[in-house]
Image 1: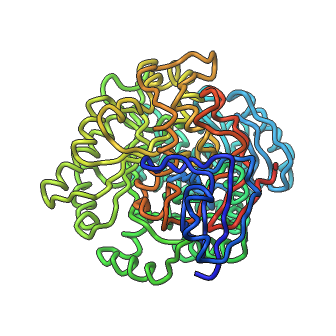
Image 2: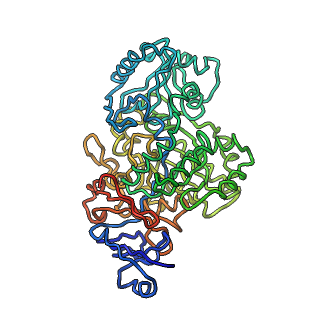
Image 3: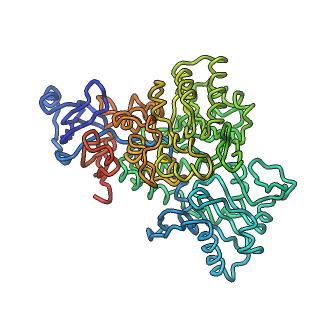
Length: 558
């Protein structure tokens, strides 16, 4: 190596249990050469020319945070649409957009938008952001018909697992009562209710509005905006968990361009959606991996495969065991029939491709564990890192079984704070809502897990310190009551779940997740030590920026 750059800090929390603290880290060619103190690394400093960098002398370094389940490119698609969501948002120009408190306010907003739609009767009125939990109930065809029976109205939920459409839009989509497409909703009398639920039905419903939704250049602009969000949140690595939903080629090219142009200071793993992969390559999917491996770099690579097996937590479309939903709903399975899941997963399992299985509800977790058990019986593997994604509603018995089978969990913990009160009374009932994200059970079972955001396809930020704060405190937003106190975890375990354990879930813990010799020089730069602040203030620690491969990126707010 030609030269070292030595960062000093008030404290470095390495997340290496053998050497947990340091004062300096030496970097060359984007990788870590030595960790310790200036005195301890003297054998290096005597031999290699070096520069001391005391920019972080009053700050704390941690490994760069890892959010192992996001949708950065897709997140920006919706920002240019009419917003009808329950939380503050911004338009593409950064101007604030006010939230709407309930369904009636949303219907009033759609009526006002329709009034401004005069002269555009042939164009669809397109909106995004509806949340049936926070805004007190689903929309349906009849409600939207009362706004207009001739102008097509298309409303996408904030968590884009549901499209709501009026009669004119249903006709434009081209379905009727005789249609048999997975995810088309119906009233009890069999009449279409205007719901299009989950991937197949949502994709069908999106065809007539592709021009409005997928504006030219949206992909790069999305990545530019979300790259800034990541730096402000201390995130240096993430995985897009539905690669190929629009186009494998365009999505890859947008990420590659964004990285090359300096818009995306991140390491990105793109995880193919199994349905699209099968549609494009069939049983020859290994050709896809061979092609992608030739393109991959340390900043951008393809990884694993994603199965979507039930619906959404905030949209209340996941699958539950007895006694089910408060109002008798049943949720929805994914497009792959559960009885075919073993056969669909087995070729990936046998070829060593890591499987990420979306399972929000406990019925779906059972199916996923049964499938993992069948895979192990058919072709036993040790370090398979089969991961259940979301793992929102589960039981302690499922945690123990997951650990026994060698499986992992990537958990969305934000819902404990933001939605446990909502869904106690609307959707899942108090028992399941309070026990959402059973992290304490995973710790007791000996299972490895990560925390993720699913940003921005659920009403939650991409902010790993907030995820850690939620996991440690489990405070319900409405009254700051601790819910399911036995499911709280320690600060140390929560921080592992956004660093080294998150790297393990992505099969990158040999390169990322801790500040150790040989790993990438990726750091989160904080103003305070998360091990020393009051755990209730964990989410409020200011983030100064990130270091990626030894290069500093400042948070725009600093």
